[in-house]
Length: 150
Ligand SMILES: CC(C)(COP(=O)(O)OP(=O)(O)OC[C@H]1O[C@@H](n2cnc3c(N)ncnc32)[C@H](O)[C@@H]1OP(=O)(O)O)[C@@H](O)C(=O)NCCC(=O)NCCS
Image 1 (cartoon, protein in one colour):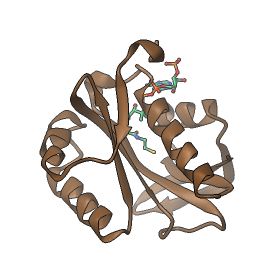
Image 2 (cartoon, rainbow, N blue to C red):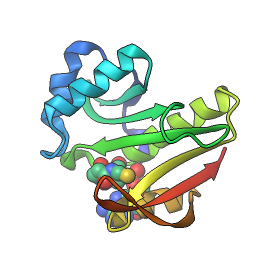
Image 3 (tube, protein in one colour):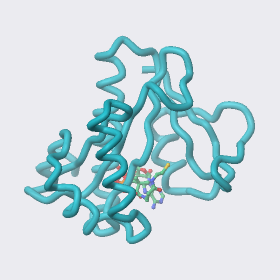
């Protein structure tokens, strides 16, 4: 149950990026996380982490700059370490993003998800995200744009 987990969603400290890299999927490289952190510091993205019982186990980012839809916050780079999935932590990260969108006076959250990413699509549909138009090619992958009014 989500309520029995001690999850904190917050901005990371710089010295937590290496711990995050160690816990995430092997395909998420430390260089990528360092790049996200640089973008966070420059204000191009807002990077959040999920802390579970003192351990940094997942992340999500938002931006109002890339792929902008009017009055919409872009959610990107949602990732949980394999050991920490199916425990409601992805849901908790999404709830925080939606809360932040509402707080900023935005009307929706939008995202891209690979057409083969069944886990991601299930998570987003469960939270009320709907597909927009047809899938499009994004950096070599076919992806849906999904959006939810908040
Ligand atoms: C997709 C991802 C973020 C989900 O995070 P999570 O913490 O495991 O998700 P939650 O525990 O909050 O799951 C909420 C719901 O999403 C759906 N879901 C999540 N993982 C699923 C899976 N592997 N298969 C089917 N449905 C899944 C279920 O409906 C689930 O509810 P339930 O557990 O009550 O059945 C996680 O699997 C992940 O990090 N995957 C690799 C990176 C990725 O694909 N990110 C998304 C890029 S767009």
